[in-house]
Each structure stands twice: as structure tokens, then as C-alpha cells.
Image (cartoon, rainbow, N blue to C red; front, side):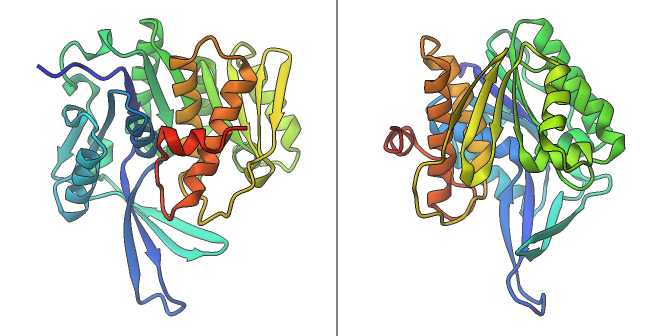
Length: 302
């Protein structure tokens, strides 16, 4: 029997359909999903990892299954459904504009009770976030799973990863997941979108007031990131690199922070932040969501 994963990311795996021409006649498909990307990054860092979610039984689901297998994710946690695939239609790339196609789709059929018996006793860290928490009935299943794992002593991380469907209906989920999580990643774009405000710092203060004891990774794109623990904060600029694209950078940074906290608990907060920032930058060195290796991250450490 294969050992159970110590890190589980639960949420959405989807297919990005990205427009390739101004006439919108040519499209490029790419496997993705923020929680799935976090799982792939953790696996790339040689941690026994699973992505817990549901995908379709068609060509799109097959591509996600094969990519999950290639990423060495524990496939016992990946469920298949006869429902349609979840698609993100990226109909403009600069600035990005997109919508989701997935009414009653496969991702919504995820069943936590159907995960392998005994896995929770081995899980040390669970990650949640992305649009899975804004899609019912999936969202309620994931919040319940997060609460159960937290009660059992599993560390929980959360990255809301704002998307347009996170309107006021998402507010209660945002607050509940913030209260549950031990580690929370949030970006300037997230804060502006989630709180529907341009007063970013006030939004961050409100969010932190819901869970003052959490560790907060606050990312600011090319301006770097900060780590907040209690009343203390550490700030770092982004490493000087030639950016290929920024897809998956945030997912790599939260995965790397979790890795650093799990594997180097003796490190100071600034060292955890250095590792997270370096991982985010390393993910920008290749096209698409490209989980960086430990060597690629360490090459960018100061």
C-alpha cells in the first residue's frame, strides 16, 4: 500500500481556453486551477502530495489526469465524473478578461467521503482556495472539510485568489475560511476585488482582524511581498529576473511558504518569506504555470 500524502490541496482543476488571435478564431487549451497548481508545486518539491477534486471523463479530464500523474500526485484523491468539464474562457489576455463555463460540471461532484480511508490521519497540511470556494455545492463541502481537518490538528492554508464570481455571495465564505486558516495568502488585486474598494490597506486590516493569529503572506507582484505575524512584518522586493509570464506565481509562493514552514520550522520569518518570494519569481521564468524545483528556488535566494 502506498503511503498517504502529507500535503493535500482541495479545490478545482480546470482547463483554460486562451484566445490566440484578435478575431477570436483560434484557441489554446491549457491545464490549470489554482489549488491544483499548488499541489503540483508541492509535489515538485518532493513532498508526498494529493490534489483532492473531481474532473470530467472526456478529453479535458484526461489531460488533467495525465498532467496529475506526470506531477506525481496521488491519483486516489482525483475523482472522475460523467459531467461536463470546467472551462475558463480567457477571451482577452491583456488585460485578462475571462468567464467560466461549468454549470453542473464535474468539479461540483467532488465527494470528500469518497476519499481513501485513513488519509486524514497522515495529512499534515491542507490547502484551499480558488474559484472552488465560490461554486456551490462544492464550496460548502470544502469549507466543511477544512473545518474538520483543522479540528483534527491539520494545518490549513487559504488563498482566496479573487475572480469576478466572488461577489457579496462570497463574503461569508471569505470570513469563515479566513477564521479557519493558519496561513493565508492575499494579493493587492484580491483585496480590491474581495472588498470592492480601492482602500487596499484598510481591506487588509479588516481581513487580518478576522484572524489576528494567522501567518499572512501579502504579495504585491513586481513589488515583492511581505509576511505578517502578529504585530510584526517583514518586507522583501522581488528578485531581478526576466519575466516570461506570471501565471502560477502566486500558487508557487504559497506552496513554497508551506514547504518552508513544514521542512524548516527553525527558520526565521524573513527566511520563510525569502523562500516564498524566490519561488514566486522562479515560477515566472517559464511559460504557463510551471512549478519550480528546489534548485530553481534556491538559485534565487539572497
